[in-house]
Image (tube, rainbow, N blue to C red; front, side):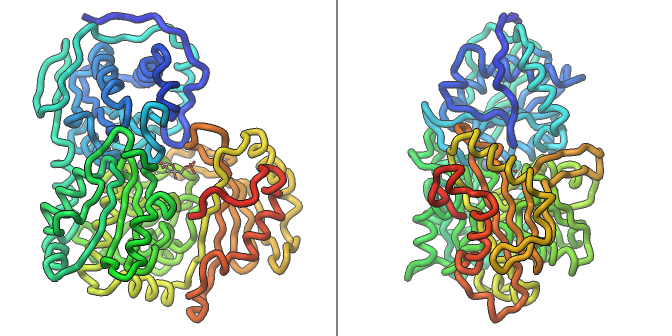
Length: 542
Ligand code: G6P
Ligand code: ZN
């Protein structure tokens, strides 16, 4: 029976870079999740009788919200829900299912790489029919609805059993509990040279994959161990846990330090990789060498034609503005389009739908292609494996040859986490206020060539996104970018992105922080980070 439950609006349901993210107790407030889900449905048109995909990364509170979402979907008039068994769907797998089964859209429950557990993070995100995150037009409408909502619709029925693959009727809606891995694994098998990779493993190639007790475990086990023949144990922390085993499921050098140490150690395997809470990020480490996400994007784009799914070449490349310009050099050489968008995967969707780009990437450990409309952690790992198998060289050899051929973009990001929001906003405002005066000024030996607040004009739908990060460009191609994170759940996170282009291969073996030392000093001088944030050093350097 459909019931209409009266509710009161919350004022803080504005979706950020990637949906609504809050601490679990915040989501557990009365009707909090229901309000947001109803606000999503109220922003959509003509979905009656259509299909909705629902799944999440298995974190704490996933199952409860999935039950609410399914019942509300039925009460609001959807015709069918496809939900992953156990409530599990990685973000890229959800995107694939939306596309493959021509769903109207999907609800993905995740807070990505943020920790999970009773007092940790949770999130709800809506994806549209192309499989990608909803554009701002829709997220703005969701926020507007959330501020005026007075009731939501649901069904007065018992919870649904999500543990078996099954299908049943719920009111006038069909619920299908589906295998979360099968469609995704089939897609990967089409894109990559599985026999070639299998052969590489059979010849003794060794790899370590850390699923970080998050959603990629079952996907990686099925693909790497079962289908590609990697030895059992190649995938570790393979069981998704509601609290990710107490770890922070962010595949960076801080949170995947064990993997990094292993790859730098005496008995290192050939290749190491990890993914995040919901399976869309990737970390790539070769024996003795970490590959920055910006370099990884450039190298994958330059070598994509070695994989069957991209053998005809790629249409173009897109990267987020703070991502290094390494990929730009590849696009230039391939004579294909290069697009620079604001941070957030949602900005790539239009470009992919219009056939302008095939491969996209972000410095925040996201790489992917038009096979889905989300970034895809395992996809990046498999493309690397495909490249390694077909070139027969090591990660180090491939990276060094790439730098020698295109030049090296030394790159790093300094994060100042959980700083006071007013202080962080003040820092950005102060930079903004002096942008016009900066060109021509000198900081140490560096001369500012240009400075702006990045604005993006979408070439497809002509929407404008302003204030997307402060860029300070120096003569010679070095750059510092300052922006505030849009994915945090407490305080503000200041991100400082630092980049230097070095064409001369005799200078390609410097330590990154050393290569960027003068720019790091300049960043402090420009933004007064220590005085304004009260921090002596970044919380994380990636
Ligand atoms: C999420 C988004 C990415 C984005 C990243 C960093 O993972 O999906 O597209 O690059 O967050 O966002 P932030 O605003 O925290 O820098
Ligand atoms: Zn993620």
